[in-house]
Length: 281
Length: 275
Image (cartoon, rainbow over all chains, first blue to last red; front, side, top):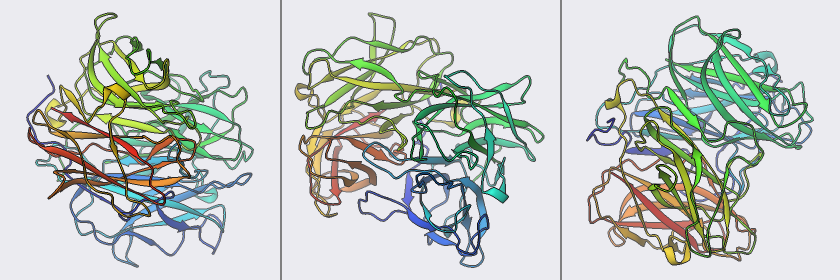
């Protein structure tokens, strides 16, 4: 039996979102006006000083979608004092995220990542747009009674195309058939967890109302499946949301592992979409 | 803080394995406020699971009491045993590009080979909801992840397929603490459940739900679980509702309070104790 009489894993919690209800939670991270596909030089504080050693970081993203517009966006999460920020989670795919509603919240990413107490957390954007913004909200979990929960100290992004604020384009299979495996990148370090994200693609700004199912694997030829069935949904206003909880993929991945993704969609001719993976080590 | 361990989960299974604009298996209740038959979600689990994620959608009808209680069970057909009883499942909208409306995250042991199924009761005869389950397991070091073997529901009013009604504070003011139930066992985690209990909500309202012990000198266990409801009587969680990982002794009075952005409509709360 896997049950132990341990105290539970996380007993401490904090959030960037003030203790008041909101129909649109999150800090507004504006796209930099200085140029398309360029990192903002300004960071926006999310948490001024974290209260405890965190071992799980939940990042929530919403509000970047604009109908008929390519909103490809990359969000960095930084740590450190103002003007001394260091990126701890780079280039989260944040474009094409709809607004929250009474039907759900668009997107999330769960990182088993260590953040020491007293840290200032912040965020910045780069986007194909020089107007508009994304809303970002972070929750931290920590405080286990022992160190039994594995968490990493570093996140490396794979499949990012900085010049277009995109990930890697994946053509899904139509009519719910599996598409081909698409190579995303080869890992440059050993990782124990992977986080998967999707956004729309700037090759296709006329999205369909469709559902997608994503699989993550190793190697595009004799593929070893790492995790199947990440579910998402798009609409004709170029918004995309995740369905269900997208937990991290836990696997021991050596450096040099070829990361691959495939997708299937309900549409007969699916929209091209944009994926990235984040290795935690 | 770091240990060079193998990761926590390296096996998973889902009851939803193809893309679907309306994911999930339809669960149909019996006559009003009566449990229906069990419907299979996963025929045979391929590994020992230590975490279940349950997603619920599509139970709402505008201006209608869609209060629903959902049981998750294991066991062969005709021999099901509820392992997660009476999840609040009513007033859930459709999964969409906005995300999916409601989820529950249960660190719970489910043995390999188990058939996982669900049934529901609703305030409406033959009420329906869509349910899908994801199971995670395969720990390389089982001592690194605590999981429960039992779930007890608190605050359930089976006669009306509801939890316990909570009146939130309006205009972002905190409401009063409301007793939801007194624990009958020691628990190591508490999972919160939230639904509506108002069939005439006037507008979209953001919600914050706080969880505590004792309604007078309340010890706050967790603040600011976020949600939103609308005038079509749909309620969705915002963000990931991680369980409350705090030991709670038997005999503890579990309490809830809530606030909403504007006009207060009655909400419905239940808690699930894991041990």
